[in-house]
Length: 239
Image (tube, rainbow, N blue to C red; front, side):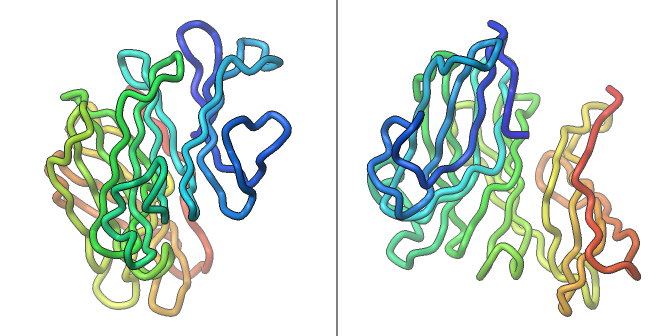
């Protein structure tokens, strides 16, 4: 989800924009997408604050969560190596990095971090962990469709603890697990993820997997393999 309700009744929404006019403040060009974060009041008819995070290349928001202490955290990817994204380890090669940004309820930037696996790296989903750090599920490779699943664990201050890559999702045709949704398994610990398995002939099948708190695979499952272009988008927990 890219919208969360805050304790004061307002809502924070995260997305991306090419526009530089209208309600958008702080964007100076329309050549590339930049990150746009907006807080609106409880009725949605008034902007309380907004933030634009920009570089000279492309940025995209993929996930937004509210933390236990009332902040918000956003993840996605950036191809920039300047302005609000000056530390792109892949920037010289014009590849994307994962970004993770933490904001207060009042819109102040607490910290902004970037992570890379020396390829095109994408942050797809993020959850807050029991130690108040964060776990990012993403992808790494030549493109979002042709790559490997990437897991990143950071502290509450955004410092990298570890990064792990999940290679071939199954033996044989399915080589990549694409993340659509991720939750914390609060009963057995670890993380449960849903999405799709993309095969060598590009047929997508609905899939799910479980990993432990250290990023090790516990189990994986591909569903509806004979039906092309199927995937899971939703995921809920009864706890």
